[in-house]
Image 1 (cartoon, protein in one colour):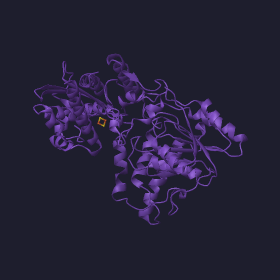
Image 2 (cartoon, rainbow over the protein chains, first blue to last red; image 1 turned 90 degrees about the horizontal axis):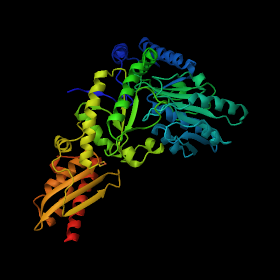
Image 3 (tube, each protein chain N blue to C red; image 1 turned 180 degrees about the vertical axis):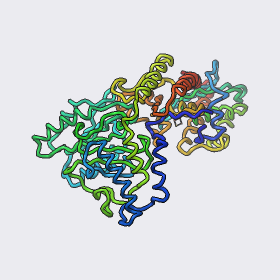
Image 4 (cartoon, protein in one colour; image 1 turned 120 degrees about the vertical axis):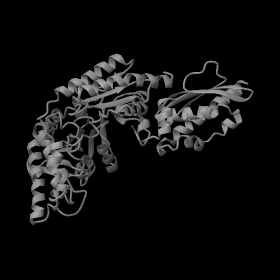
Length: 381
Length: 124
Ligand code: FES
């Protein structure tokens, strides 16, 4: 049977060439980068090399690059670390952030404003401007939403915050989780105007187990983990050399790839599905969207059963349905965009990638409509 | 193919035998799952106290569809009192097992059947 992966937003396969390049770090080059002998220095060289590539990609100083084990860990450090020593702080974020931002924020217990994201799934700069208070110390916004793929005006907000900060006693620290943006959008930190940025290796054809936290020099941030002095003391612990090296190579590859082909295939999926399947609708702005994402609601069906039925045909996608979540609650992202529970319940996220082919798209477009029909029949819709 | 569900669950999800609206049903039970927002309708036909036919319409996950199918199959041929005694455990046994987070879907099916029987009793 065919096996088709349309879930690149969840994770990506590791680039084959990268696998070859990092293999030695699971074998003979096993040293600890903190060791001064040749084994250690060899590993340190790989980590430094990756750091250089990150700095080049973000256009920042190597000292500003902190390696973490995941983007979730990086976001935790970003949020809990900046809030740690501050009295009575106020934070601004959006109502459809990733759990890796919302949960640490909740844990911190600080006062927070959640910006609306509207039907398009995009925050508005005016809303943010209005939400700023005297005690606002942190703005944290994802660059691209992971479920609907909509692009947030990160650079525009960066300029606004920079201007505000000129007159402010309490400076606002600006954080963006750029995990879903890195493949497709410019990420130079000075152009974006961000002080802290998060990215992840396994969404960009690198291995799982490595993330990056960029922290601009002189940004007030306190450690939340304690140990030795690796990674500017923000993430003490022996580095995951293999994954970090892979992340570096993955970043080096960004920009070499042209996403036009993927965008065309994605657009074909949206056009065909919306015209051929009764009632199907696209969630989130079509224009302000990364090229690989389609998030579609199929009224009269339930997303988990859709996903499972597609999986039996060999196609892997994901869903915002409550039935597929461990907590049995529907996607908070879709609800915050104003979708009804039913519509969130009936949603699928289709995310394409570098290895997607036209044949795979054809196959998917052939298999999907009869599945929707059948499930609608079973539901009596 | 997904290993999340057993073969038997997948079979019933992909090819349920008892789905569809029943015209002229003697009892209809409509239930909703408060947890995840699913909807299920169970229809029964009763003759001399015995359930002679049952069918369902379900908007829900694969487990909900499979357990709806099981409950209809188990109800047919029983008298209404016996049918009320169908347990979650018996149903799950028919599917070999269900992921823990999906057990509540089987209770929805039982509830649907109970409501259909209630409806039948009321109409009598
Ligand atoms: S019907 Fe929602 S989890 Fe089964």
